[in-house]
Amino acid sequence: MKFRSLILANLFRKKTRLLLTVGSFAVALFLYGVLAVVDHAFTGGLEVVGADRLVVINRVSIIQPLPLSYRDRILRIPGVKVVTHDNWFGGVYQDEKNFFPQFVVDVETRRQVFPELVVPDEQWNDFVKDRQGAIAGAKTAKRFGWKVGDRIPLKSSLFGSGTWEFNLRGIYHGERPQDDETQFWFQWDYFEERMPQSWKGNVGWYTLRIDNPDAAARVAKAIDEEFSNSPFETKTETESAFAAGWVKQFGNIKFLILTIGGVVFFTLLLVTGNTMAIAVRERTGELAVLKAVGYSDRFVLLLVLAESFVVATVGGGLGLVLAKIFTLGDDPTGGLLQIFYLPGKAVLLGAGLTLAVGAASGLLPAIGAMRLRVVDALRRV
Image (tube, rainbow, N blue to C red; front, side):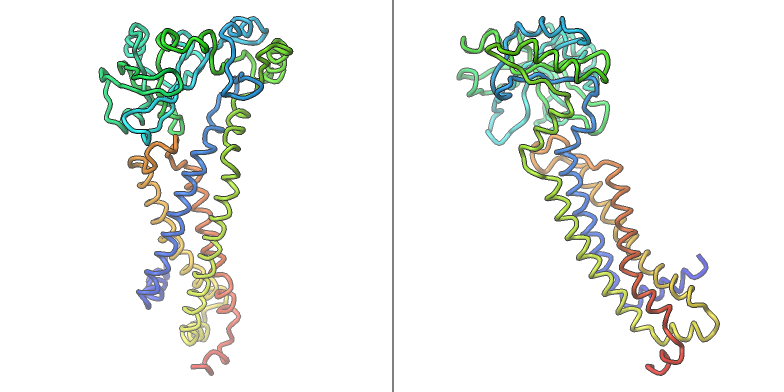
């Protein structure tokens, strides 16, 4: 860059002011990164759900069971390829603060319905052979320091008192960074032999895959009609709709995040704009001299804008890098957020916002410098 030394000289004229402005950008973009992580934790599941998966729950509520006998009837509906079932367990590991999702799964169909959650074949086979076997997500295993072969005790208040013992036979990983790696699975057979008599023959919900995603509405309607006017009526919807409904229970998280982010960036715009205006005012005589020796109004405009862009790029880039580094470490929420990940598109959006704020904050001072008349400027000196 031909005038790089001139731009740097102007920026480092007031080192304290430069550091504070760059720091403001860094803090704002770091906060943006954290907010993006929280938003992705609540809505990221909507992006990775299977387009060919449907979820069947009790029409009253997901906490109400469905008969196990529904499985075969669902399979007979045209368009349904495979069906699996789950139960929420709600156990406690060592301390009630150690929350992580625990599911009772059907080992025969689990991997067919959720192929993106990968377990090595050898580990899966060991899991199937062991009635007390369990599979843990990579994040949960890392969180508690578990390794294959460990004995895992869980206490349940939902399904009888006492401790349930499990042998960790495998650890699964998601194929994508945003896949949920916090779950804990164990076998339906072990659960059924110990469950209360009132729960026997029932499951929590069904998840199924269909042949054609375009037929999702038709298949969902057929399933609900199959069990209409029965003691256990169903509500069937796509996995994306089910996930969206689950997120809504927490309130309008996205609106809250957008509001906080908007306030942060608007404040940053005011702070940076004021800083650039003061910097231009201090150099009125120097800008006039540049014009007097032949530099154009356009050059002066671009010079001021370039200074604003440099400050925004350095500060914003630093903030985004710190946010990314922050998400690479252990989840500070202790597993409260199932997905603790800063997606690439959020980083790109942050970079775009950084440049936009840099341009907006430097635009008015740059236009003022461009319109500056040499005679009037030198008269002020």
